[in-house]
Length: 221
Image 1 (spheres, rainbow, N blue to C red):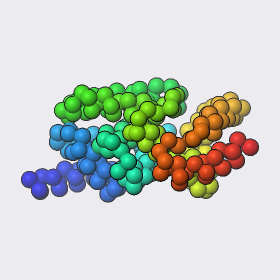
Image 2 (cartoon, rainbow, N blue to C red; image 1 turned 30 degrees about the vertical axis):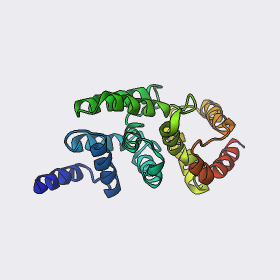
Image 3 (tube, rainbow, N blue to C red; image 1 turned 90 degrees about the horizontal axis):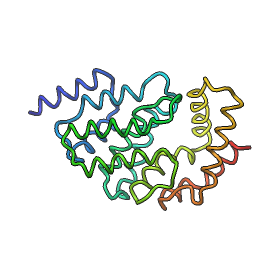
């Protein structure tokens, strides 16, 4: 049995090298959420999706940053397996030319989790968590708040990483003319700056809020 598991893990890593921390995160949340098997085929497809060439910010780098931050604060989650699984899927589908990426990502998650035997109530909560990353409304409940705060943690990154993030987002929207992009981007960033507080989880607010406001004000200037 152990040899078979090692062979499966090796197959995942051969298809595309998977960081050890990503593999550990996946194996933990897949098991804790009650899914059957190990889901390594799905893991390989997700890793491939996050490495699609059109992605510059919404990539494996962003996924890794989110999961690393979650790992440091997982004790704050009510249902940590659901939050972790939602993080894996929250940008699983990403195309800057459409506006239903989160809905498609949530549908993909629901289909895969259903096939893996996860209970419908858990699936429903994972879907709601993913849809919360549309950032169209304030997150409801501790798990949504934690997940959304983690997704927006980049706004409170140190200045070099924040500037890299801004460049990556512009590159993802390279097909949009400058004037239109700047107008749309100004509205998005102003919306985040208007939130008071920006971060709903006290611990993340303590670490990120001030830097995020400095970054947003600097960008808007």
